[in-house]
Length: 181
Ligand code: ZN
Image (cartoon, rainbow, N blue to C red; front, side):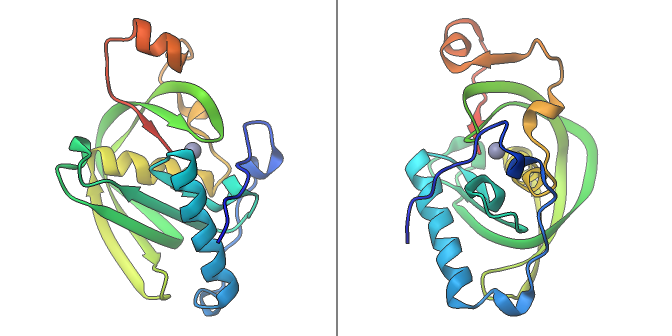
């Protein structure tokens, strides 16, 4: 497995609609290698999630891992490999967080998203799964799965003025919510 280079804002691969993954290919050595590279890259860059287009692979695959010590996750530990995910909104009420993105390094911005969603996907063994997530985890899922449609969080800023370099955010913003995907 290997650490891959992360595509940054402006690279066209981040704006493509990623292609569906053939379920028969999920358990192949090549795909397992890709998933391993995604974990390695996500851990190296310190993210909580990574979508395949972010490492220049325009396919519908994302990984998400929330540390159990992260209080935003309610004390649980969660790791997901998601192929061909589909999102259904369960709650129209929104949750607002200051999001960051490994493809937009050094910055964060305030985004509001539906607070609860259902996600249908194939796991790393090509088995169909469905989960319902809410709160911070729902934000992470939506952020990552947006990448598969060529959408970045900067497209969804609540207000263009709610966008900041991390250093200035730390100095001047009183809200502590943040994430990096
Ligand atoms: Zn991102």
